[in-house]
Length: 146
Image (spheres, rainbow, N blue to C red):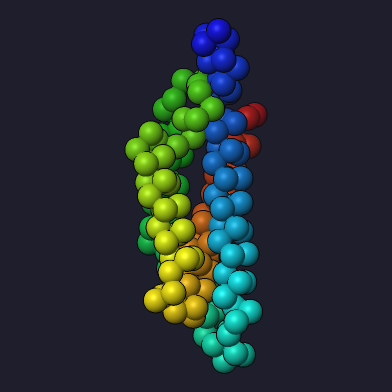
């Protein structure tokens, strides 16, 4: 039974690129959407501040951090066998980081001593960086698919 399930989780390697891109795009959009809950509580000046600073942080985070992570991930995926497990789109230790980030996000969203403005900036910045970086997975998908 376990072998049957394991066989069903095997995909062609290029699928991992599209899966990674879609996941990064979706998570980025979810964070940006979540920021709206705080944006709606701000006055117009703070909205402009939150969006502007969040945008700047998103661009900087994309260039300095996430671009390197994506390149490393793409190179790692390229080295995998032609047919591989669907969960290999992330390293195993990245799943631990994901659980930590989800927990941290839960804490940030539900704590009252972090300002609404800071929460909005943080979620816009990280969300935008994830969203933009996710698109870097699509060219290797199309290149390897051919």
